[in-house]
Image (tube, rainbow, N blue to C red; front, top):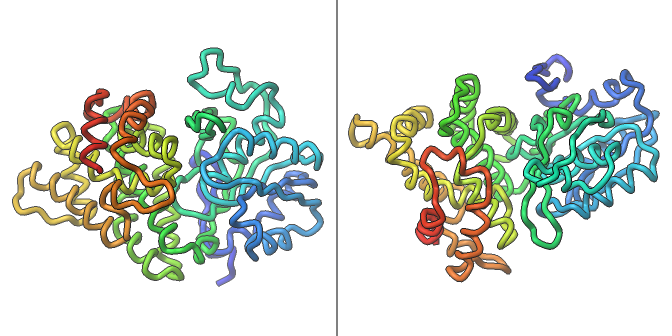
Amino acid sequence: MGATERLSRFSFPTNILFGPGARKLVADHLAAQGIRRPLIVTDRGIAPLPMLSALIADLPGLDVSVYSEIGGNPVKSQVDGGVAAYKAHRADAVIGLGGGAALDVAKAIALMATHAGDVLDYAWDHPRVRPIDRELPYFVALPTTAGTGSEVGRSSVISDDTTHIKKIIFSPRLLAKAVFADPELTLDLPAHITAATGMDALTHNVESYLSPAYHPLCDGIALEGVRIAARSLRTAVREPHNLQARSDMMMSSMMGAIAFQKDLGAVHSCAHALSTVADLHHGLANGIMIDHVMRFNLPSATEKMAELAHVVGARAGGGLPEARAEAFIDWLTALKAELSIPATLSAYESKRPVSRNDIAALVEVAINDTCHRTNPRPCTREDFERIFNAAM
């Protein structure tokens, strides 16, 4: 069976080519669009890898330039640098190659290539938000992690360089014209990155399903996304070259990003606070916080969490929904231990450890974050303080 015969094609609404070898079709796709001078946007970690040089080699006849000044959580200055690179190259398209940070910056570069002002002027909560009312350059995405699902998302999360506060830019115009979802691009991810990004994908699906917003279409996608992650995340971490597990996680990641059109919850508000205050990796922050927030949510989401227990195969001591919901939380805690995700914030070891001295700052960011507005249980400032204390 040839490489292209193994590919699946979806339109949901983005055109998605999914499967091993999908990356090989980028050149033909761009040629069909009349693209001649693409800018590849990627991160500092990918820039020196054979992955990038191989992609460029697979783009014969195109005048390719690379912008790779992206690292950590994406910030405005990275977007500004990318826009300058786009204009200096006289580019006519953007190719996003990387994880969530690179893809978010790639979308923002495409936006600012045709729009005036400051990129953060386009954040949805800006008091004088500027409209995204022009066509963007042709944009295609190649994810190299299975976590954010940014490749199929219609938003870009960019932080202010000084405050580190995350701002969300949202518009259907940010959607990629085509996604080349090739699980082979994830085979060499280190175990700790696979685990953290996998917990991000799982969290997107879980929080989308628990959101009280009415969207049965997203509920179905989210439940199946949880089921797929539950069966394959451990394998992807333990057996990095297991292509089926890698494919499953890439699919679960995309499903989570599609499902969270329904919005997210307090896990993400906590994670955004941790990224802002302590520069934690977003997926890792979700992984640390998810079971602590689920315990807070239990009284308001018992039936749905009982259904999640069924989906992941968690066994309860009794048949009552409360027992099954508790079993789901216990399953999350056990999964974290198996993946070496810290059980608590104090167990997280880094140059910038999180302590109880950070709680006031964490609460301030979390309460002002929009994600918790669709948490199944309303969160007050005092609630966030209790959640962060419990997670310590």
